[in-house]
Length: 80
Ligand code: SF4
Image 1 (spheres, rainbow, N blue to C red):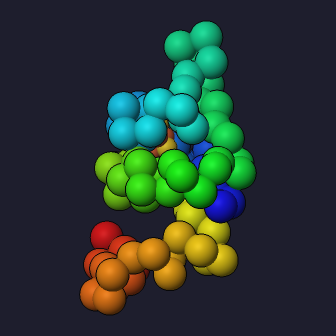
Image 2 (cartoon, protein in one colour; image 1 turned 90 degrees about the horizontal axis):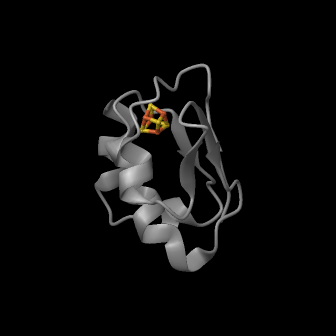
């Protein structure tokens, strides 16, 4: 799967790191680092990380992650 973090939008809250520590981490305690192509096995926690982000800075590739969301969740995502 593919993800993108808008680092201009990111306020370094660190919620994503708690939700998905394999994919998101802070470098030197400051800059957010992330894996732009995490393994599909991590999809669930990456989706959780995206939802946990207070500023919605995490974008998940349309190719697969959106398909995985149950009907109705798409709607929620757009209006958060
Ligand atoms: S949760 Fe959002 S704002 Fe916080 S560090 Fe992650 S991407 Fe940045």
